[in-house]
Image (cartoon, rainbow, N blue to C red; front, side, top):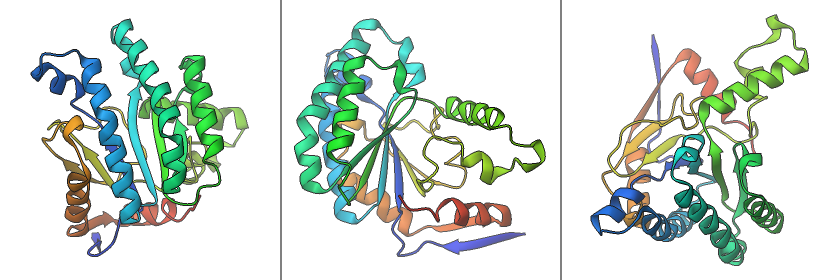
Length: 249
């Protein structure tokens, strides 16, 4: 038997975004992939503005996956430099908009300059009370679940006490509610190892728009579509949704 819960007129508390299409966008313009990444920075600004204006509480952006480390060294170096420069250049605007920055992933694998830039912006925005922007860096869903299992084992928890709730408490950001909505750009329709645990009951929105072209109107359209859907959960799914979305930061 399936229970239903209508989300009409409800705003998603948490939206996650797979920012895809930078490379293809650049190739269409006979430029290298870094050109696409650089132009995608304005899309990040646009989405952060739109999410804040709508009243979304959490926005998670898939900025760099663990699989991305296999890309050419030159591209990775350029991406890391772009990340550092973008963080430094955006911090004042984030503060002005009341945006708090957090990050998730195997951050120890990032270059020291990137880790320093992240820590600086996180510290400077720590008192902001508006949108919480989460950057997923050197992240994968399987990595996160594996790390959670390792923490459970190290804790010495009795095997009979391990359940979904206890495992979730050992995930990376247990205080953050699961995304109600996932947006993926560029027409691809897969999760790509992103938030595999948290997206169990999320609504999925796929758009052919490539990330460097994605703007406020596209984000608002995705949220509008979400608000018109009727969300359906099995009994276990409904209980899990209520439990995981109850926490506030």
